[in-house]
Length: 235
Image 1 (tube, helix red, strand yellow):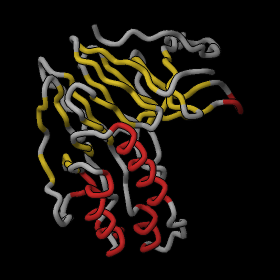
Image 2 (image 1 turned 180 degrees about the vertical axis):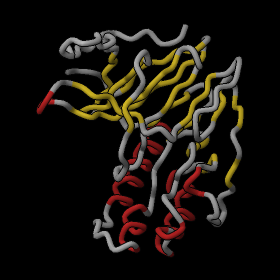
Image 3 (image 1 turned 90 degrees about the vertical axis):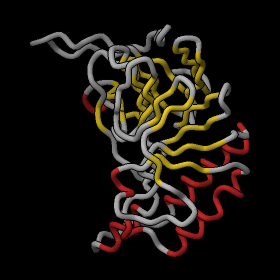
């Protein structure tokens, strides 16, 4: 399996880059788009007596800072679930979120997700789904005629291989019928849900993006081995 650090995605003349860092870069609008960081998830589990290490947030935030420093966006937009729950919203995490725009060198915007409900984040307004250029930005999938819906929430993963060699890899998933692009979860401490048949996928593997277009599984036959093929995004 081989790939590049990013993949071009063209939708009606508007170009996005799908990054191996589990983010989408919109160079025309200067937007860095990420979804589902789930910061504070370990602390949420700890409050319920489940011992999980607390170092995941640091790695997630450092990865975001690295992307922001590299691309120097006009804005970073989180498509929901920046945090996991109010139980994990510690004083230390609040301080990190307050410092984040200055550390990134640009404003941080948040499209409110289901995990932010009932939470107050100082200096960060939870915005509703919104249009920016040809994009309709939302947390959960929310197709909108005439715009490309870029969203999160689903934590898409692809099942690659068979038996003991099967892998679950995070991916970008594009539904051509709904004109909807779902971003992989950005947080390191997140699970995933297998994608539907027929979606165009870009796997995130070993620091690279790999276009993946598996053939539908035949009924009542052994599942064939999946092979990477070129994927043509929307024209």
